[in-house]
Image (cartoon, rainbow, N blue to C red; front, side, top):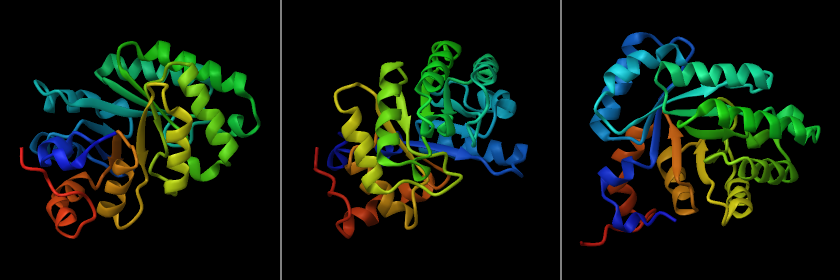
Length: 240
């Protein structure tokens, strides 16, 4: 689990996947987002589709930033073959991280064979890219969340992600259920859809065990670090 008392702003920035996802995004928005990513040193920069990936690859050359995009984003109901093709195309264009939205309709129908197959196809199509699977937990019952997490672990997906950020985000209780279900599996946890006030809530999820936070508000949250320490929301930085 992350220890914020030992992390300065540069280290904290690596807990965030920054994104520019609006439907009306233009090239200037993507390049501005990449510039902010370089400035802060975020772990990843995401666009809504691989259309923007060549520009992001150009902007983030010679950095260690993951170049990410969503797969079947944000609804997740595309057939597995389509998701696999989209994943292969994203990787071919330069993506090094891919976040696939799970078919939660099939999940809620307990079609676990469908979910297992799409996860396997996704992993195979991703190759060496980092794999993250989006659950959209606000639509799910606890039993669905548990089943989804177990399938993610079984299929070797690297991250379980709470939400796409396009609908209602997770409750802390839903996140903790994911954390506890995946304990000891090696699967990491990513939270998206952090509710207002974002800085406070983002840091609570990190202290509860999140490995990554995906958000367009990453600069705001990192900038708030000193204030969050000052008012006691997160631990003060220990002198090294």
